[in-house]
Length: 434
Image (cartoon, helix red, strand yellow):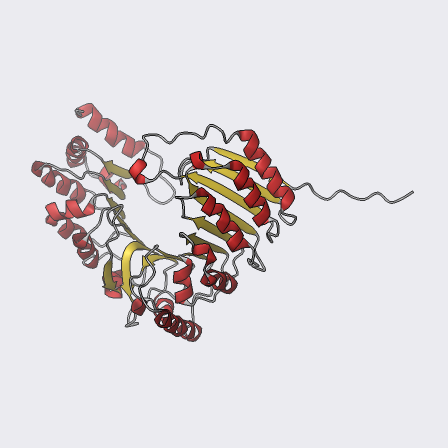
């Protein structure tokens, strides 16, 4: 697709005329080499007013011809007021154009940085930054389990200003306790060994944390005695190190939270549960310690739909969370294999004694990668009438539940295919005998 001068003028005019969003004046997105050429020419020709109004740049150009490298450098040099930068395919772009990284790291105006498809070169780029960031997102290549291990020195220039650290492929070894991030409110990292999984070090580094997320990783291949030893260490360290008084949201596998020894009650707790994970006693220990108000359980054993509903009973029978208000059950399973009658019977049986006010059950159709279909089929026999009936039966079965929501969707993150809601009627006033 070719771009002419009118296209460039239209793009630039849109940037100039667009209303300023809440947190920045305007954004420029470069998706093709044609857009890059005309934007670079336009910003070079205008008097600088438009370039100064742009503070957000998104680069989505993984494959640039060598002759376009200079145009990209010209464009970035003209955008002197950038505060937000996102680079897709960052590893490829920074490796092919090292001078681009050299120019960006010497800027001091950036506050937000997002790198996708990141690798070794991308992390070296992060370590060289002079800007004091408020938010950093660095994500590796989709579908890979590669991890990178760093100390807190990776983010030292921004230690005093960072509020959000989203690096799900990074293991941060914070045991030296030399750098703190007092403004950090949201942290998403991972771990690969028990030695660096240190609650005391985490609380020292992020004393005012509110949202803590751990990427799902395989359970450490250590003897149970070793795991219990590290848990005791974390329990003691967590009690002796102050901080995390405002922690209100946690997302992590139950086994990881058990090892971490966290004892702080939280408002929202999200637990991804793998095959057979619901039967683990450690899950019950975690629920008792964190005592959430809102609990989300994500059942990942999607290969067998009936195993999912059987896990409900295993988990919920002993579940007694004193202040639980909302329970959300996410089930990733092949809906086309679902036996609704069996599902209904198991749900009614296993949720009868539920102690909460609101129940949401969400079904996400899961298609194994080896059998991926171009477009997921809608179940032909799971009709709206039956889902409505399921919702009403659940509400009638759970005596304490005041609201039940059942959602059926083809994929996680997409709009629900269908939503069925049932609310308990308010108690009717009793008429006195005449």
